[in-house]
Image (cartoon, rainbow, N blue to C red):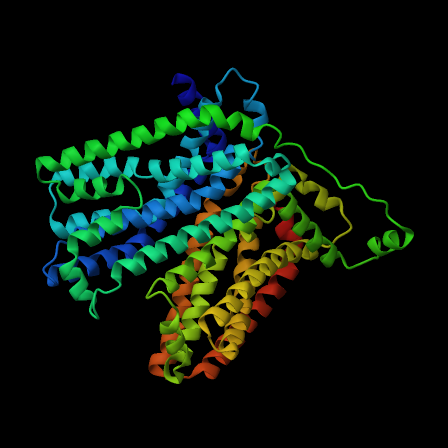
Length: 554
C-alpha cells in the first residue's frame, strides 16, 4: 500500500505542480473553484430550495432531493470519467516509464485511479455541495449531518469511477484492435459514444416505465409513490441509497449504520477493482505505443495532386485536424468528449415523456418560437463551448510549439487556423444534432436552419475567445495529458465565461421576448446581426495583435 501512496504523490506532483509551487496560480485555482461553487449554488442551490419547499407543500419527505443529488452526481462522474480513464490509464506518456519499475500492475493503475478521483471531486462539487449544504440549512440539520456529508462526499465518486474503470480495463484487455494506438483510439472513441448512448437509453426507459400509469398529475405520483421514487432515484449505483439514507437519518442511530455500510461497499468495490486490474491491466496496456503506417505506391498523378499548393490557413487547419484525430489523447478528450454533451442533452429532452412532441409543440407555436430559438442558442453555446478544443489550441503543441515561429506563416494565420479547427468540429456536431432533432422530433426544418446559423455564428465568438485565452495562458511544458486537460484553471475559467455569456444572452432574449414581444424572425435577425458585429470587431482586433499574442507563448 505504501508504494501506491508514494506513486500517487509523485503523479499528483507532476499533474498539479503549478498548484503546489506557483503561489499566483494557486490563487487562480482557488478563485476558479470558488467561482464554480458560486455558480453551482445559483443553479443547484436554487433548485434544491424549490424542490424542498415543493415536497413540504405536498406533505412529503424532502429527503428525495438528497437522493436526486447523489444519483445525478454519480451518473455525471460515471459518464464524464470514461474519457479521462482511457487517457490516464492507457494513453498517458508516463505509462512506458512506469511499467519497467518494480511495481505491480494494480499498484500503477490504483495510483492513477486516485489522480482521476481528485479531478472528479472538483467537477462534482459543482453539483453535490450546493445540494448538500442547501438541504442542511433548510432542514436545520444537526452537526452529525455535516460530518456524514463530508464522509459521503469523499467516498461517493469511488463506485461510479470503479465501474467505469472496470468496463474500460476489460474492453482494453480483450479488444485486439486497440493494440494499435491509431486504430484503437478511434475504435474506443466510437465504443465510448455508443456506450454512453446505451446508458442514456436505459435510463430513459427506466424513467419512462417508472412514471407510466401514474396519472395525469406529478403531484399525485409523488404523493402515492414517495418511497418507491426514492428507491428509483438511488438504485443506479449500490451506495447511493445508503448515502442518501445516512444523511436523511442523520439524527438517529440508523444514520451512522447507513454511512458505515456506504463506506464498506465502496471499499469492497475498490478491492474488486484492484483484483481485476492486477490480472488485466498489463495485457491491455502493452503494445499501445506502437503505430503502423499504410504502405502504398504513389503514382505521378497522385504525387502531383498531393503537392498542390494551397493557402497557409488551409494547410494549417489540415495539420490541426490530423493531429487531433491521430493522437489518442487528443482524439478522446477533444473529439469524443465533445460529442457526449449533445447526446446527453438529447436524452434529457427525450426523457420527459418518451418522445419529443412536447418540444415540437413549443417550437411550432408562433408566440413562443422566438423565445425557443433564444433558449436553443444559449444551450448550444454552453454545451459546445465548454469543450477543451479551443482552450488547448496552443498548449497541445507542447515543446514543439517553437517550430511554428520558424515557419513562413503569418501569426494571424496560425491563430485563426486553430480557432477555425475548433469551430468546424463544433459546427459538424451541431449539424448532426440539428438533423437528428429534425428527423426524430419532426421540428420545422426552417427553425433548425435558423438555429444552426445562429449557433454557428455564436460558436465562432466562443472559440475565438477560447483560443485567445489559451494563447494568454498556454502551458507548452506539460509532461502528462492529465496536466494538459484536467489540471489547468483556464478550462475552469472558460466554463465560467460560457455561463456568463449564456446569462447575458438569456437576459437579452428575455427583454426581446417578454418586453418587446418579438417573434421568431426578428429574434433571429437581432441576435445574428449582434453576433456578426461582435465577431467582426473581435477578428479585426486579433488580426492586429496576433504577432504580439503569439510572442508571449513560451
